[in-house]
Amino acid sequence: MGVKYDRDGGSSMGRIQLSLMERVLADGLGEMLFIMKAGRSGEFVYVWFNRKVREELGFGDEHIGRTISEVFGKEIGEKMVKRYIEVVQSSGQAVYEDAYIDSDGGKRYSEVMLTPLLDEGEAPYVVALVKDITGRKQNELMRREIIHRLEESTSRFRALFEDNGDAVLELDPSGQVTGANPAALRLFVVSGEALHGRPFSNLVSDQSRSLAEAAFSLAAEGNLQDVRIDVQPENGQPVGCLLKFTPVAPAGKPIGYYANLKEMRELDKLAHLYMESQNQFKIITESVSDVIVTIDGSWRLLYASPSTRAQYGYDPAVVIGKETGDLVHPDDFPDLVRGYEEILEGRHVFQIRLRVLHRNGGWIWSELNASAVRGPHGEFQHMVVVVRDISRQKAEEERLEHYAYHDQLTGLPNRRLFLNRLADRIAEYKKTGKRFAVALMDLDRFKAVNDKWGHNVGDDVIRAFSHRIESAADHVLAARFGGDEFVILITDCTTREEAETLACRIVAALREPIVAGGHVIPISTSIGIAFAGPGRLSTDALLKLADRAMYDAKQEGPNRYRIVE
Image (cartoon, rainbow, N blue to C red; front, side, top):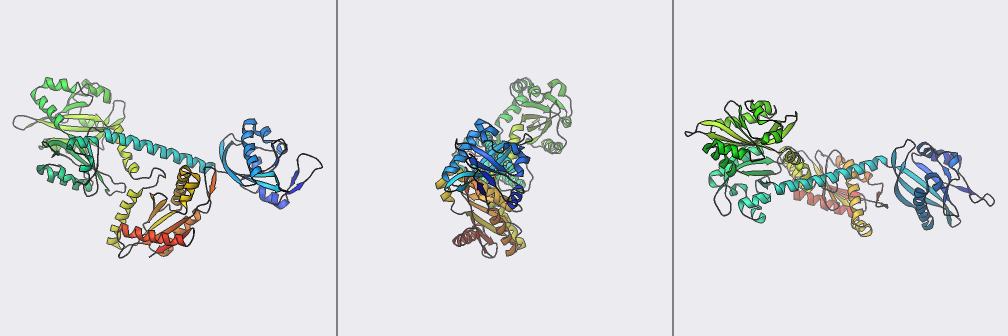
């Protein structure tokens, strides 16, 4: 901006002149623009501002000649003057973020760029360009809140997993153990290292192996079954358990499983005690927090323990004689029917999760463990059902897939999820021949950012970089691969032109520098893109090609890309 200064014959404040063209341009700006003059007392005086200032802050001609403290008060004025003095003393540009209240009383966030105007070696004038970043700041605050909740929920889930009284094993798609909670280690009497990598089928008795393998196969097809098996601890007798495989399938196809093993010894003992004495059974049911009910062959409730009142709000005497279907969610009732029919046909126990109606009208996620009570000749008499409120556990489990497969810093999918999706796409390519590509990129000179400004600023840069990639590649899977490396699975990319279009969008998204920790940090990237094809039909082969292409691009300079067809 060309600015002329008039000396007014000894006056303490010069008069600033802008040409007609400069006024038109300044008033047409979408941002607020101020010109301030440094006074002798260390204060700064408003000498000019554009139309946007008048609209946003309600400034008028009466503000010309007033100091910052006179307009905004002493406390705010001192903070602003300190920044202005720093710019005057350094004769260099500075950028910082600020907040203010607009003329409508709303809180706005801004990015302020201060630029000194030199006058005979001094810097008596400062131009302040105030850019509204309210939308971006609100999105940033929202993302931080989401990441905070993600970390908090992940912590709660891990606590739930570790403290679960049932044994839980994490399995890979082939059924090998990849993790175990403390209850599982106690059940099998081994260390986590000893369990890791072992096939689940090797952990059950010989008699139960075929049943466990059948249940695993059914779970892979989405047919979840509860089966009674005997597991074989490292040293000791087989232990009867109720087994259920739960697939982890974020995209509809299992990428792992959880094997839940509930020891049945206590429930078996409970059913046995009931057979021995109705009075003894009643004593036991009245001393436990879980709800225990008995149901006859016509679905009628014969007995309900006192804990029914605390858990579901019903007086036990009121629910006795009711039809079971009146208390179970309609969508879940068919599953209960199938389990009950299996009990009638001779199956000993079954487990199911369903929603039970609370007296206040709400639905409570519950886990039912049912065991048949039979007469001396094996005839069905009634069923004993232990009902447990699992609403909190259910809520955490529903978030598990997201928390286990997303990066905590950026919120993007993580390496594990990306590799699973890439393996699925390779398998599809082998069947259909439909082309796709993988893009690998990193931040140029990112180590220098960490070394100069520290890891907190580095994390902010990584987070901002990921947001820009996600915005530029909104129609494909973008993931954080590790450190400052990011990968993109371009699922439907069939031509070089399509790959170039995506690379150009990413480069364009990085033209603006990132503001992190009060610093303006220019960023650039190097991108390597590799197409699937003969001889490159594995995750390792594709990623190595993309990595080599990225390295070649980096040698050519910043914001370059290389494509391997």
